[in-house]
Image (cartoon, rainbow, N blue to C red):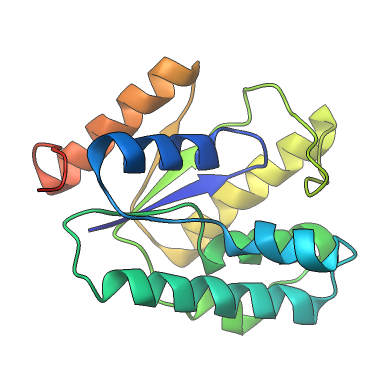
Length: 174
């Protein structure tokens, strides 16, 4: 089962994905776009977003080759589609054409925003717009999704419950 963490910047997706990977032994595919932005900067062109989606997809496919019971995706090309919408006001068909996760967990933008050099949308208005765009992409894609919100403990509890509801009891990998 693939579970994609989705949503606006600075909502705990990466931190929680890494924590669950460490504690539960579930494989985790980190965010390719972060490494890309750190290497190339954040003055993105559409070609950069397409390259990010291809890199993320390749990393996801490589992780899926091991056939894990649960695979955590820090992001996927649908999140890159949200970036395209935010930055350019359009979403290329390519970004909507990648394989989809089994479950998307939409992290609410109800946590403090922390700038880290790769994040661009920190004002309350920009965060609200980003969160709305993230939800709209999930609706447009017709995927199974659930909202995750609240403090850090609540988010973790909601994530584990959502995964269990789809895959059965959540355990560590053997």
